[in-house]
Length: 422
Image (tube, rainbow, N blue to C red; front, side, top):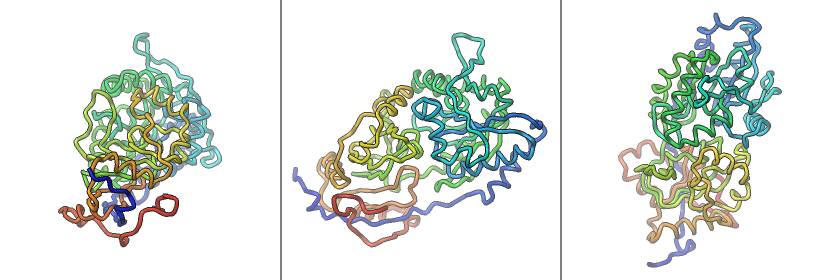
């Protein structure tokens, strides 16, 4: 095998845009008010309603919360925020409140209190099958959940990431999150829906606000669902989300650069559907895409040191490694149980060094044949940097009409081996 140094390869890259059609709802407030109007008769003046929110990065999350608070206030209802994020934030009340503050979800921003606690109440009469729910939420006059419906990073089933999961793992705090995840994928596929039905039958959930985003992360569907409709409607919303999930424009890559990973981007830092990697023992890897080496370069501030998903990469930078708080990451994976996803890959001193390792991991890659793509993160796939050979592959595809070239070919690295700004 001929070893080719990075200096000899003389790689250049072109920035391109994938054109996705936006289906954004033009007026969030008007749309949501229309959805919420059906609940007015049940919202008696003086009620104290808990608004349950999660730890995911949702484009219009803050606006939707503000509209809901305003609507409830007009009905004479008092509201407050509770975290519904299982074991995130280090499985502590303070950690979960800190995550919400990072999204602007705070008393200062919203004008209502944020009440974070890890205590739960068991609403089940069966000692062998506990059904835990956040104690603060249970002691309120009712709970309204807000969450995005999207494909899950661990499994494929009727209910994946959405209101059903929030009701069980989110509102169940560390207790129910640990119990469900301890059963592996079977717990998520089978036991989670069973518990959700028990929670919805309790009457404590007034409604769930379901959000579906389009391929460029804009809110395309927004529904306010009574508790007794969630189990029926959510699978249809999940199908809609799946139909509008973006992907890479090529199925075969030598190297994928991921500028940043994090809990605000995906539950596992980088979306396995984009990478074509699950790393769950006993479950087959996706058929596509096939990426020989993945490089992860940085960890988002909103991850608060949780590097869950780092094991999906083959190479990471020293910058990313230094931001990982092992205690936070390990506490999360102890709950989720998929330990392959937290194994530390090769640590490179900078991005250029990382590419040298990544290409070496591919075996023999001939000069001028390197299929390399760089993305901002696995959530934002509208703009990409592609190597010249990758651009040639794109040009040979029939769907090249949705690719717009934005730059001339340029060097990808600055001095000291850093990537040029995205």
